[in-house]
Amino acid sequence: MSITRRAATLGGLSLLAGTSASTVSRAELGSFLGIGEGLEDFILATDAYIFGYPLVTMETTRRVITNVADPIGTRGPMGQIIKLRQYPDASFRDVTAPNADTLYTTAFFDVGKEPWVLSIPDMKGRYALFPMLDGWTTVFQVPGKRTTGTGTQTYAVTGPGWKGTLPAGVKEYKSPTNIVWLLGRIYCTGTPEDYAEVHKLQDEFKLVPLSSYGKPYMPPAGTVDPSIDMKTAVREQVNRMDAVAYFTLLCKLMKENPPAAVDAPQLAKFASIGIVPGQDFDATKLKADFVKRVPEVGFDRIMLQFKINKDVKDENGWAYTTKTGIYGTDYLMRALVTAIGLGANRPQDAVYPTSMKDGEGKKYNGANKYVMRFSEGQLPPAEGFWSLTMYDASYFFVNNPLNRYSISARQNLKSNPDGSTDLYIQKDPPGADKESNWLPAPPGDFILMLRMYWPDESDPSIIDGSWKIPPVKKV
Image 1 (tube, rainbow, N blue to C red):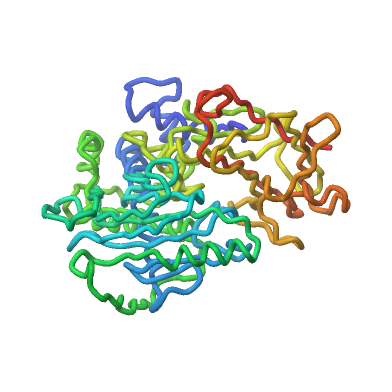
Image 2: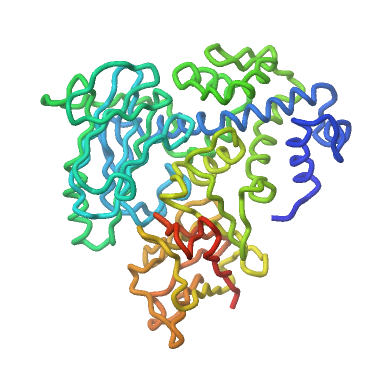
């Protein structure tokens, strides 16, 4: 991604938001953006857009995923577990950058009225993790093989204001917000036999309100709202919102999903543009002459983080960060991860290097053929698993004759005589002798993502930088 004058100006907005002087003057910015008076408020509005992007996206995701009467496919009502029985395919649009290595076992539930109890069965040593995200996309707890083992476990997820006594053997996980997203992942090889084994495990999961724990429980049917757009991708729905609708929803959501205490200084600045936690949005304080530009510029600032955020590493054409899952006050990073990979784990559980360009810095395109070579003993070091996933330019799976959306060790990769391993990234088949190592590409532009679940923390490790990702080279 090249730094254009527009991108540089957007980067300058970040500087001007916290300093009185910059190489990019306020007058230049105002002129460039078509804003006369009110540039300071415009900067605040784009800051507020970035701040609220995760919460608005989570709510939009929740509405789409839960807008059904009964669990079916990738969707299920509030408080009911969704059990994906096979990997998502190229038609999947609910979440950007899905994976094709684990069977999602997920649920949205509201802990505002009472806690919910999650019962996890004996996973029999299988790799799995069950991160719990609050409304702001923070992973506040993550039971699973790495952290709590694979035995039987029972947790009560409680709301931010709940106080009470739990049954014996039930451990409390307190959510910072009322909205909770259980985004469980169970590793599966994808064979019919392994699908069946994972299906048995999924069927043993239970999620019930605390008042029904230990009693027969039949979840009520979900309520279907016909006004909810069930076809347009969530990110596109969020990006289409005008500033008034966006901030109105944000303020409504903050009433039941309070920001963290560390957010107070940032939120204090937003009061002047009508955004106050616990109150409805006051649209009269947002100037009409720039309101249309806020979503566009706010989202551009989010995506610009690929280039300017100091915590995004750029190595051999691969951009990645180890600042996922827990964000503190890094609102730009939180928004970026929401935009390109909603539901990202903590780095100890997964790191997601992403590549939009080859080793020479040129954009990927299916008109070319590429090779990614791992030297002997240098395949991605991960305790859980690793995979390389193909996405189109919008971070969705690419349709292909093999229905192969990622490649990993489960493809029984063939090594070269010198012990190295080549992955063939191209549109057309590379030949029968190389098909096991082939990741099909689309005809047009594409993006690659290298997933490393439970990355090694000892040498070599991507977390401390001692393991380097090899470049993808054009043939």
